[in-house]
Amino acid sequence: MKRPTPLFGATPEQAEHFLTLYRSAPLRAAAAEAGLNIIQATMIARHSGCLRITEAAIVNSKHGEIGRMGEEIFQQHFPEAVNCNTSVAQNNPAYDFVLNGMRIDIKTSCLSASGRGKNRKIRFRCDNKFDTDLFIIIVKQDSAAAVHDHAAYRHCFIIPSLMLLNHVKIEIIESVLRGDNAAWAEYLFPIEKMRETVMMMAENPEMLTIPPELAECAQLNRKIKKEVKSAKPKRHRTTA
Image (cartoon, rainbow, N blue to C red; front, side, top):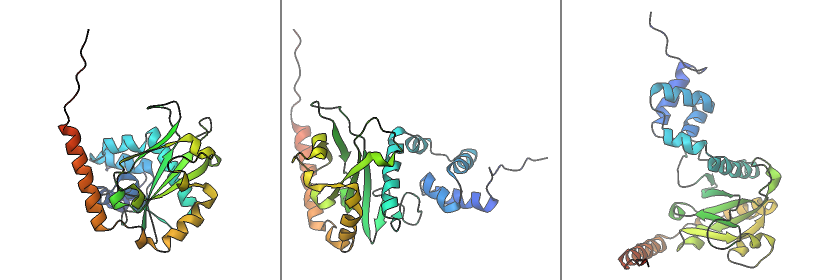
């Protein structure tokens, strides 16, 4: 007698709906749309032979956990915003939320001391700036605080993509959080001011969109820089 296909607590309709969505959507988004928890979704995908292991590794990494914390804090302040990570209809890997048509990417930083200098820094990449209107970097300054301690996230940087045209990677030194008037300091806000500031911007989201001509110029400039860099002769160290 043939054993029934395990559904892991889901109905046949839920499992089928999830698998259909998962062909083109992330695991979390497909699970949420089908009404499944992440365990059920993972088991169904695994049993069906379609689980994307690389995605599972990213979702369950420490970096992924910190990132989800930032998204959770943002959603608490903006319950009306559409979470693109759990919405199949809105899902887009270039940004995390849509608020009144404004595309918002959430970054979360615990600061790090790697790289040049002794100062801890906030670091993030903005490769997706041409597909995103606004970056919000939520900062956890106290390294001793637990990742899930909401009170540890007291600052945020609110940076329009328009200000990042010629940037790929951003570094902000920790002293900015203490009032130092260094680079990017003018974009720093206490977390309590995040909703007021972002809602003001969301009233006219079209003002934040990068005009096509500017995007074209910035992309061309980036391409030229890469070509110039790759054309430079490499220095070879000599050994004694």
